[in-house]
Length: 424
Image: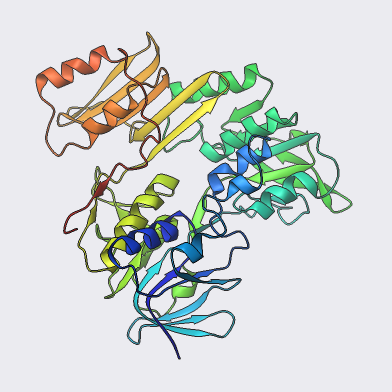
């Protein structure tokens, strides 16, 4: 019988941050990590940069290969959880092994959503989540002249930009009327569209790919709803991710799309925690549940879970969407819920177009979201005011009209926000 005080499923940012937090409070307890990834500590957010030629394969990993040894981790690569028995504190692995634990963190991440478009199983159709995905897009099959990207979220936009930098023609299609529909509004989306088009990237919103065409088994193009055919050699689906929770059937762990976790990253079962893309956490703005599938969120949640696995009661606060983008000479920073906000009796906008585009959304005298394009130096300041649990004063609200004066965007924007530690 194999037993460990700490068992962590997943070696992404949430799992690794949890290990580092555990070691702050427990330098001796055995830690076992289970990973199905052939590239432990891979950074998915860097894949598009690698594809654009901006970083090496070695740089894709955010920890060095000796990291498990330095932190005293027993790493079990090439395996994954097949089932969990929360009552017996037992995890069955896909390779037949069984591990009993005292405390368990589920940080199994998420998998790309693949739309069942006719032809989606054609060779040359891919998602982008792993290093193997990135390698197959660039290196497998016929030479690439054009890539079609299905989905205009932040990943799709970044991929279009970096493939263009590699000298590949790109067409990006988003079926919603705007890009990054959860984060941007129409005006900011149109600004990104104009920027991409001005550099030769074909981008269309309100357009749906109806069929993927093939020639001798390989992608030859796509047919759009309406009949237009666009030739290409690769199709990348970038329409979002789905939490990896299939192995939790009959485990007793509460799941609602992802694993339900409280502010301490604890599930409904004792001694079981969840963090990262697999978790549904509490949104500090809406009070509802959110799948905050970003690198900064996974890192913060892993730190909270790891510290609490050692007996602390730390909480994750200021949990809301946050993202940033740099395309050519255009910088974008967006947080919270400014994209779909509609002005009403309790909600109002502050919009400024003198230095790019700035939209700050307020409700009950609190900032609930913002979009900055062009000059993004005030993103850090706006984030700090979003995190306040009290309404802004009239003077503070008035100062929002005078943003843009010699403030620099903090490095690592948002990577530490939302972390509240006590009981150290």
